[in-house]
Length: 132
Image (cartoon, rainbow, N blue to C red):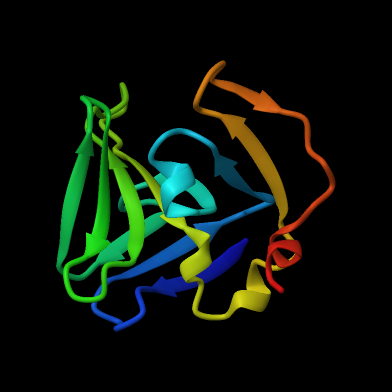
């Protein structure tokens, strides 16, 4: 199990991810490609805990993207609809990991959120390949 902490640049918004983690997801939808986020999935209050004052941008009926009202970093998104167990989907932006080396070796999964809504084949790149 991994325990990864993340925060926005000013430290007001924080998240904690506590679950096994094998990859980060890069999505090319009209929002995610603008944010440049790398996502890790779980449920709010379970694998993922979030704190701090945010503002949010509602993307349709499904997702609220939360960002720091002070420094503007996109920290996470929350699903608007709970699953059959009453859980709320939570997805954190791994680019905000406080210790980047904790996520550097994660493989990147590509998701085509723009056209097909399909997972795309892995190309072997990992998070640290995007650092330069």
